[in-house]
Amino acid sequence: MAHEINSATSEVSLNIYDAIGTSTVRGFRQSSTKLLFHLALYLSFIGGSIWLTWEFYVTDDARFLVVLACLAFLAVALGATIHRLLVLSGDVVILSPEGFHDLRLTAKLVPWNLIEDVSDWRLRGNSASTIILKLHGDAEDSLPLTLYGRLMRPYERLLGIQGIAVHTWTLDISHVRLLRLVHAYLAAAKKSDSA
Image (cartoon, rainbow, N blue to C red):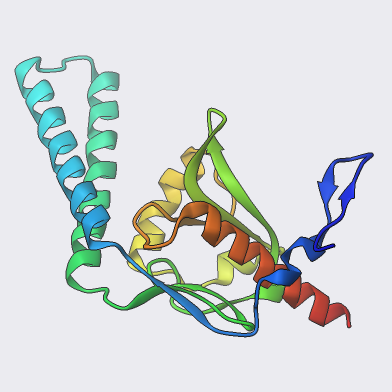
């Protein structure tokens, strides 16, 4: 049997991932179609926000600040999408026996022994196509982030995300499949560390 379920807690043991080969390096690219869709979406949101602000000139300072914060977030997302389209080619997310590397977020590989937990971030009970890598101690603070990683950090904290947020919505692999692979690689690394 490939997996065991503890009937008292309904927890699936780590050996569920034994069937997934974790001794190879796997890389995943961005989907150009998904990136172009996001580009159009961000442009429409920014255009709509500017039009609404201009049309109904918001005089309440607090509401105006909220609109500006939303525009700033969308501008960062738009800039990141354009950067991804023009600059990043090839594999952007890499899983290896040594660790996890998202070229969009970090300047170097995150070793599996630094990762404490992997989870699926949920917004109002629904998956938000974001994998959260919770790191041990202060490892996250010492991790060299890319410009995009540094710009997105405050917004992720505002949303309550604690850890490295790996957004999967523009990758050429499904969110669920990548989440399973990350769990498998982490389980294999923990297994080899304990052996």
